[in-house]
Length: 460
Ligand SMILES: Cc1cc2nc3c(=O)[nH]c(=O)nc-3n(C[C@H](O)[C@H](O)[C@H](O)COP(=O)(O)OP(=O)(O)OC[C@H]3O[C@@H](n4cnc5c(N)ncnc54)[C@H](O)[C@@H]3O)c2cc1C
Image 1 (cartoon, protein in one colour):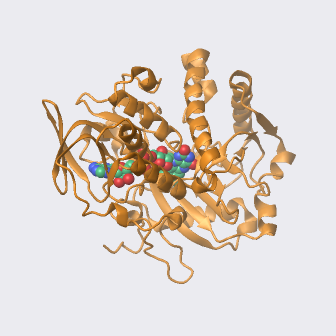
Image 2 (image 1 turned 45 degrees about the vertical axis):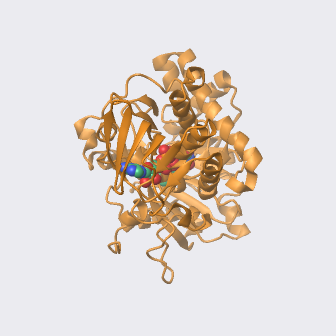
């Protein structure tokens, strides 16, 4: 299929291998994730792999969540099959910013005020456990997953944002013991070579991975444990039977006792109950050509990970070889995934860092995440008896595998291991208005305008 010339939809959907560029001529950017260049060829997961007629567990979706659950279940001796509509790992898991922290959509202070300190500390304790598990893997696997233990700088572009940010992190330092450094106007200039930041906070303990290498590592680990992982096999519908499920795929049907849904932002019509609960939100990323040392010194001298605290923020990381800047944003702004949005993102980069005015962009892509009505991720069992782990609201690199292990423990009937605050009985459906494909972009574009730095005549 040839993508329409102004659309990157195919390059971001699971119909096309994200390793295949649809536009690499001359100076044009390649329309696939920079991270995908590090992944070996796809043949292992080809569409002709034979499918069993039955197995213990079918997992729908083979990103970080599905593959980690498959590993745990296979380790416990279950006959497990993870199916993906496209290339395993070709969804958000290899399209993201690679940042690893202890954050989700709710601020710690906000949860303290609404649910009480003890509950807030409970949630953030789980974020810590998810982070620690990935940091532990990073310490063992190192370069194999592109692990870097680098701190994160959160920049503020207005006085009001700086006050909010400082208040949040001082509270986190006091109640969670997080090590932080508050940066005033002079010190933020040593971190971010941009006139737009007024201050910020450095969170000392954070990390980064190379999403392509991390996904590949997780896949190989699951396969070594005995999991079967098959790509290019969309699940089209599911039927409940007396002793389990019949899973219909584009190629055959499979009977199994349990199913686990791990489709996150790519959840489609085959899973209507889940589709009503997950808002698919596109986000965009670009990679620069390798930058020389002088440019790094001018722009991001410390090479950490970065984002700002506006409601529609930009985020940045660097490639593990320290050469390229990976820049993301324009989240939710454009459901049609047009290439114009990548051009606008490149303009944002040059606007924020005037020193990058002439930088060449080599890669541009989009990925899809899932937002939930209550902004919490969810793990549990649906009224139809399907297990699920999804709804990460943009922080799934550590949380996806963490909740995958919780879901797998539940399937294995290990209630102690399965316990988590994210397994709350209620998983609210989205209101109809939120499901309209233009509502979220309208809202996020409004936020970008409302949160623009003072005096700017443009939203970024
Ligand atoms: C641009 C961007 C930046 C991000 N940055 C960060 C970050 O810095 N840090 C962080 O922690 N998180 C980040 N995230 C979020 C993170 O990438 C996701 O939360 C995580 O990858 C979710 O993994 P997953 O396995 O649940 O879903 P995915 O990796 O999206 O996998 C879902 C899979 O389900 C498959 N599927 C869907 N329907 C079917 C079907 N019917 N049959 C079979 N298969 C199906 C899809 O093909 C897909 O491969 C970012 C996301 C994006 C898009």
